[in-house]
Image 1 (cartoon, rainbow, N blue to C red):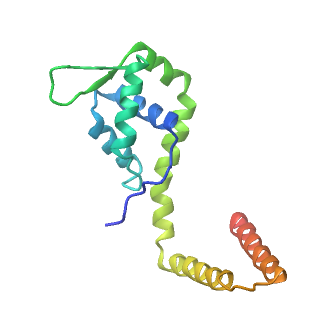
Image 2: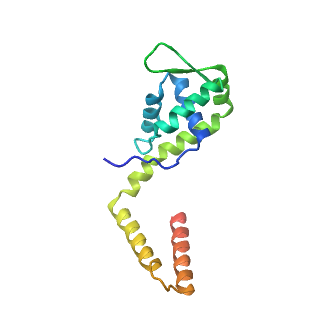
Image 3: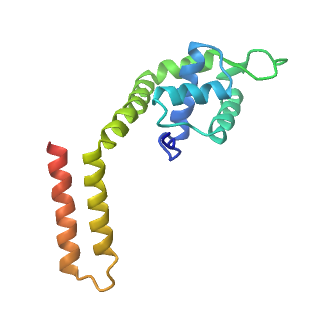
Length: 158
């Protein structure tokens, strides 16, 4: 099983919008929100509880969400009017966030093609080997930078 991404894919405001999006579809508690976001990215990104729970608290303090049943063992949240308004105002942002997360699975699948993995490995190895040399000349550095920029341009145009 691949290791899930934990790096910062979304900023806090984007996480909150995504949480509001999922809560708007059905009442949800923190773990369900983590799973919904993970499912959206086909398992390639999973926000940590340390991201989700403080943002649930903030959304509740902002009066964007409320607890459905305070007596339940797990707090499930539903949207308030302010949450619906935030979603409506940020509809395009929410769509862009959903698209970005959905594209992660495609990226990882294409990056895991053996030939692509090998090419990435070769570039990393060559680059690290040259840059690890103590007395690397300015001309060599400029050649390396030019080669990387040229490769990036060719890849971008392909």
